Structures are given as structure tokens and as C-alpha cells.
Length: 182
Image (cartoon, rainbow, N blue to C red; front, side, top):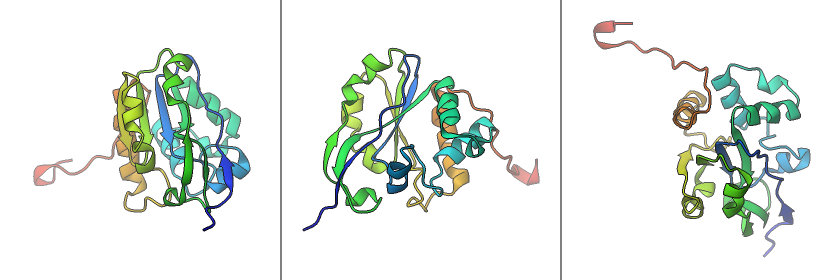
């Protein structure tokens, strides 16, 4: 049975002042080819942050996006360092080796929370709970998570980011109250 090529993940994007690390599962084929986190054009990750921060992140070069992410106290990494996989689906991941998630506290002394981006990453929550920081589950930013609209993802991500003191400029849309109040 062919399990796909052995793939290496991306280096972490972290700083000592990082308060919140978003942990994905493993980079997509597009991300590995570009050597950029969340490079698939249909992945909502950068679009979510662009909405929350009211910034044109999608128009910026990748390095500027990373700089902005770090300035906001956020970091990026994946739970898996390497795996075998055909395509980009998490369900196709085989023979995975975990990243050294226990090192997050040393790498980020200001760490307050880890947010798992999607279900496959969430499977490693028992490891991140041992860090002694808050552990959150975010709806996956992947295009495979079609059951969540972009607006619903933005609202869920805004809730997690604000709880962990990551600045958010987004204001939720107003809905009509009782008796049609606005």
C-alpha cells in the first residue's frame, strides 16, 4: 500500500513575546511548495486574520504577514514535523512524527494559550494541556471545512483571540433584536 512520500513540515514562526500559538496539523501541498503557512488560496487563515485586524494581509508579501502576526503576539506551527501523505487532506496523514510541542514554553516565555486549528491538530490537545497554558479549539480554516461559513469562522476566531489579548478590530455584524430593534 502506497502511503505517499515522506514530507517535512515548516519551521515554526515564534518569538519570545508570542502569547498565542496557532497549531495546524501539517502543511498542504500548496504550502509545502511555497514554503509558506496557509498558502492554499482557498484556505481561510489569512482571510480570517485580515478581517479581524482590518488589514489587507492577502495583498501583502508573506514575510510582512508573518511580521504582522508576530507583532500581534501570535505564532504558527504544526503538530506534525513530518508524515507520509498523498494530497493535502488530514485524513491521508500516515506515519506522522510530532513536533517538539513541549518546547513551546521555552521558545515562547510569554505563552498564554495554544489554539488548535481544526480537528486533527486538536487530537494533540493532551500534549499541549501539559504546557500549563489555556488550550483552545478553533474551527479549521481549511477549505475542507465547508460546514462553517467564513463569517462563522471569523466570529469563533475573534472570540479566542480576544480572550487571549490578541488585538482584534473586527466588530460583529448587528442583528435585529426583539420587535425588529436595530
